[in-house]
Image (spheres, rainbow, N blue to C red):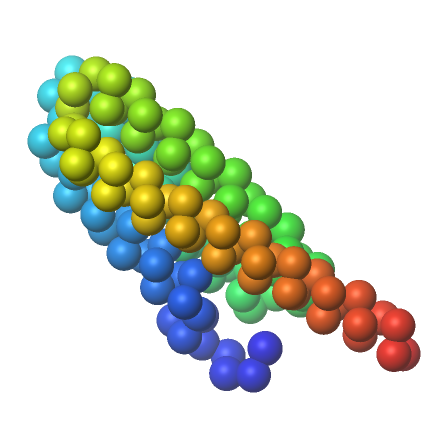
Length: 127
């Protein structure tokens, strides 16, 4: 993985921005949701970039495992945003904006994970 800085990864950059966007959105959620939806949504969104960071400094096999965990957190955030929209905590435009970012990041992470897996497989074949 050439340059050993996770900040150079596009998936991390997008995940980092997504977490910041979700934190900003959840500021307007009702206080009654502080320990429920707000907290869970913030944790799920923050789990995406942090799992990318943690996995980045491990071997390829472990990196794939952490990427899969990050994708799971992304899907959790996607569902929680649907709940927030259904409760009218966010506007339709805010919901679509975040969902578009989640879908884009999900696709990017899936492709990236497959790429890492294939390079891992290629390394085992050439040994």
